[in-house]
Length: 171
Image (cartoon, rainbow, N blue to C red; front, side, top):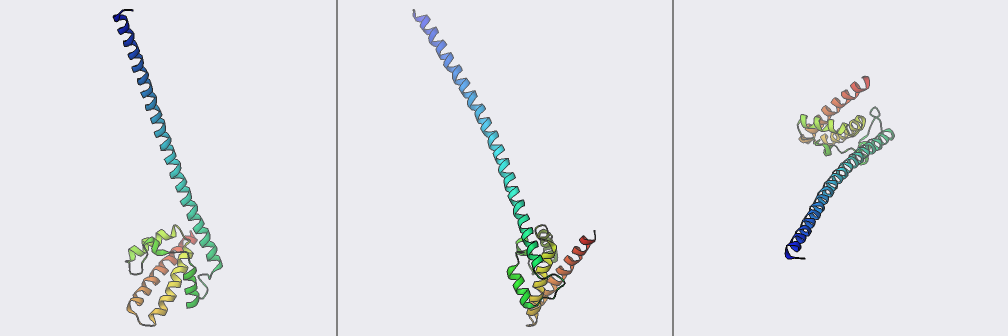
């Protein structure tokens, strides 16, 4: 075999190796695309699982609060200061989680109550406000100015929620 033939053969070998590397590179690219698609699908499944878990959690909270409500004092029954304090200790409704603060403006308090109604039954929230009114009424006996203001805020919020509750029962 002469030198020219060997060079041609070497060139053919190099070309075959290049084609092989090109094929390998294409396979790697296709595999990377499949991996990316799998990751996207996995992320979508994880998001759906998180969403389902949050939905399940909120339903558990609603169910738990509904059973607490049915076993506790109803809105129409008298509630003593002691009953109110016990209710507040046992209540799972945390209005501050939704931005409800007695010193907040009416709009802020109302928005927070609307958010809380999406998680807790309105009756449970009314009961919470009722217990707070009873406790704060006791505080106004000491003539604390801020307690009087807070009590007025609570009464306003309580009456608004009661009206909304009655409207929703009639529709």
